Amino acid sequence: MNLQLHNRKPLKVYRKALRNDSTLEEKMLWKALRNGQLGGKKFRRQHSISNYIVDFYCASEKLVIELDGQQHFIPGGQEADFVRDEYLRSQNFKVLRFENWQVRQDVNLVVEAIRQAIFD
Image (cartoon, helix red, strand yellow):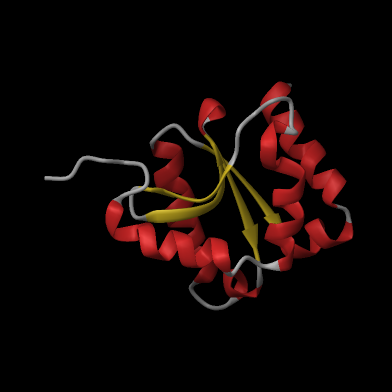
């Protein structure tokens, strides 16, 4: 039985495809988070935890960041997000969700909210 929680091999091709096909909002936020720009914290893009692939992950803080586009607001989308978030929280991960429009409107406000979740 495979007990590996992070970056399971069967999801590798999906993680890579998601990284190569990032949304505009993911690119904007990644530009602000990469290379330890947020207080020296290391973030990963499209990191898998169990069978879920999260948009951004900071291992030192057990912090998951999800950006929600239109697919999250169709029938079943919010329910799936709820189940996913409950699972991640049950594994002691902190989950932050932002809508794409928030990143487009002011990525700095989103980064500040992430900073507060880590350092406050």
